[in-house]
Amino acid sequence: MAQISSLFVRKVIAAASDSLNKPSLLREMGVDPDAPLDFDMLVSEERYYDLLQRLAETEAGPVEFHLRAGASMRCDEYGVLGLAWKSAPTLLESFRRAVRYAELINGTRLYSVHEQEDTVLIAMDREARSPGVRLSNEAAMASFLALSQDSVGRAFAPLAVHYRHGPPPGSASHYQQHFGCPVHFSSQFNALAVPKAVALEPNRLGDTAMSRFFEAQLDHKLATLQRDISFEQRVQSQISAALPTGVPKKAEIARKLGLSDRTLNRRLADEGLSFQRLLEKSRSALASGLLEQSHYSLAEIAFLTGFSEQSAFTRAFKRWNGLTPQAYRQNE
Picture 1 (cartoon, helix red, strand yellow):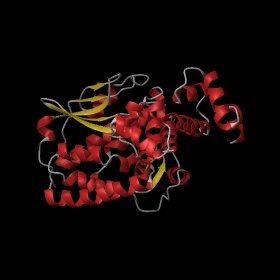
Picture 2: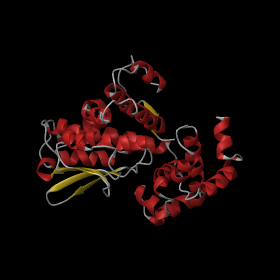
Picture 3: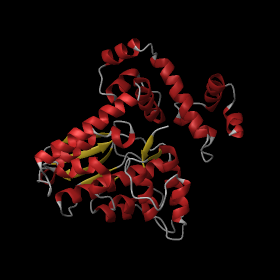
Picture 4: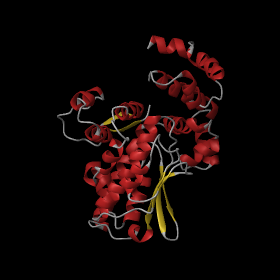
């Protein structure tokens, strides 16, 4: 399963209700509450999404803790990546660094930057396959705004915030109050839209020489990461991320890996791999991980692993693991 920085765990727990035993929650997530913040310490992505959902259930009013957590983010807390972000010459260049080094945050290429005539959007390609992922997507836009304001050295209102998922139950007015701009749900993408004039402003600590120094460190970390993670694992990670929206085609995975169809085919052949076999392995691993999360029904897991019917999922899972999904869950 994919992993993310423990920074996000610390932030959402800090922003949650004070009635909770926060040190206990941190220890439950494998984070020492007395240890210094370490951006490079990782936790399971699925456990993080489950935590978000649990914390949301403790909110007395509208769910806002995740937006507060996003708003509390600062560049310095992101280690070398944060230093590269804030030392970039402009906010637009900061966005581009987020795209370039996204794999250091979550192991996948989620981000993209889109320039329009008067607008720059930093977008995130992640489907809200569960309530926890929805909350994470919403918090990400709050984080982007906080980091952007930290970089330019002043508060500013974005032009708009977009979410692919639908609005939460009840009023969504607190989203607009938080961001200070229109917030659109059921959009084609998750994105923060900022005025192009702001995106082209010099960052308050922008320094080309320092930025290149930090980029060199990040390039080394990225190269090390890509050496440590096999090509097979990289393909499987992208397949798993795409499954909640349907079974991905090979061309889609090639695009997410930054490869042409021909290059992906060649790399698979060179390593003796089959795309269909990796698809099956990814579905099996994702299903097994979701079955360990008790709040997912079998019908939901079937959908999240790309099956239109639960019966087809049950047959496939038994073929993969020798047990039905129900029997596998009971053995855990």
